[in-house]
Length: 340
Image (cartoon, rainbow, N blue to C red; front, side, top):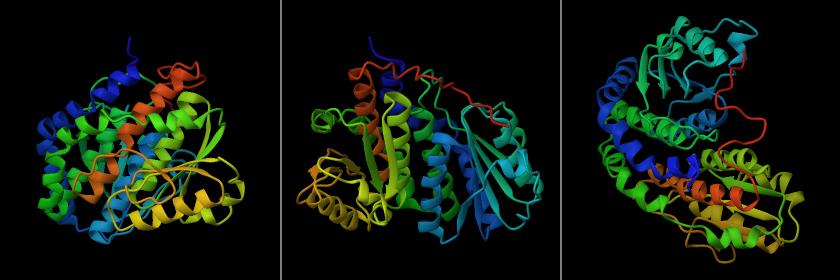
C-alpha cells in the first residue's frame, strides 16, 4: 500500500493542471496588479517548505524583473510589532493552511504598510486571504502527509504564473502550460544509484545555485523531516567557504543543477568535491567525476530547476521507508505549525 506522501507526489501533475485551469483568473489579476503597481521591491512572508518556495520565487522575480526581493521575518509583526514602511512595494505571503498566526500577522502588517499583498494558500477561505490584497488558491487539494510536496510545488507554480502575467512573458507561460506533461515524466524517474550508495551515511550536503538553491533547501528539509537524517543546504559557491572542511571520504553531496547559466559552475564544484573524496551526485549530464542523476529538461530554466525536486521527492519517500520510518508521520512534527 502506498504512503500518503507517495500518493501526493504522484498527484502533482494533476494538481498543477488544476491550478492553471481553476485559478487562472486570479493568477492573471494578481499579475496585472503588479504590472500596474510596478513595485520597486518585493518582500516574502513564509516558513518551512513555504519559505523555500518563496526563495525560489525570489530568484525568479530577481532574474526576470531586476527587482530586489527580501524575506521578512514574521516575528517582526507577531512578536516585535515593528512598524513597516512598504509603500511602493509588494508582498507575497505563502501558507498552506492560511492560518499560521505569525504569517497572517505579517501579511496584514504588509498590507497595512502600503504593500500590494498577494497570498498563496491551499485554503482560500482563511485568515491570510482576508489579510491580503489578492488571494490565490494553489489548488493542491488535500495533503495528508505531514511532509509537504504538492503544496510546495504548486506554490512555486502559482508564483511563476503571476510573474508571467506581470511581465507578459510568453515563454514562461508556454513552459507552465507544458508542466503537467513534464511533471509526469519527472515523477516517474528513480534515483536508485543514490539510494544504493548512501549506505549508512548520517549527514550530507545539498547544493544548488539560483532557483536550484531553493530546491536544495527543500530537499535538505525533507531528509530531516522524513528520515531523521542531518542534511544542510548550501550555495554551491558558499560551500567552499567553510563547510567544505567537513567533506571527507565518501561524504555524500547532492548538487541540483538546472539547465541555466549556473549549471557549469555547479558541475565544476561537484566534480571538485569528488577530488576531495566526496561521494557526489549532480543533476547534469556534463559531470566528469560526479555521478549523474536522472532529470527532465523542460526547455525553460525556471521550470527546469523546479522539476528537479520531483525525482528527489520519490527518492526520499522510499529512503525513509527503507530506514524504518513512516514518511507520513515524522516524529514530533504536526501538519500545521501555529507559531505566534
